[in-house]
Image 1 (tube, rainbow, N blue to C red):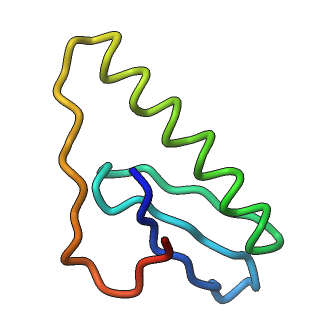
Image 2: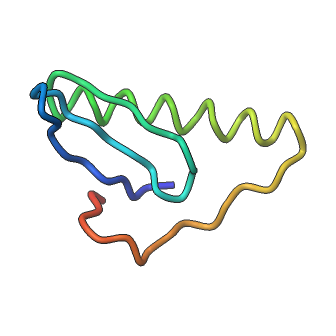
Image 3: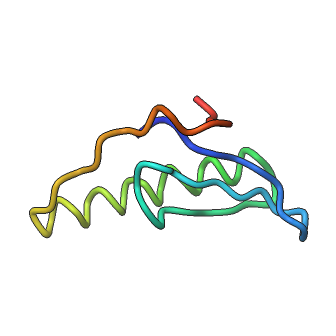
Length: 68
């Protein structure tokens, strides 16, 4: 999973979501922190799917505003 959606919320935090992994969201005080946090969240999310023998979703390329 390499595509994420990154935006600032009303409290001035950077929010980052991985659209391909439902509910996989993180945040940070800076873009860099948010991106580092989502990498960790994605790794944990995929590890949990693998542990439970569940399929890993395909990447959703149709979502607008993605960061590569």
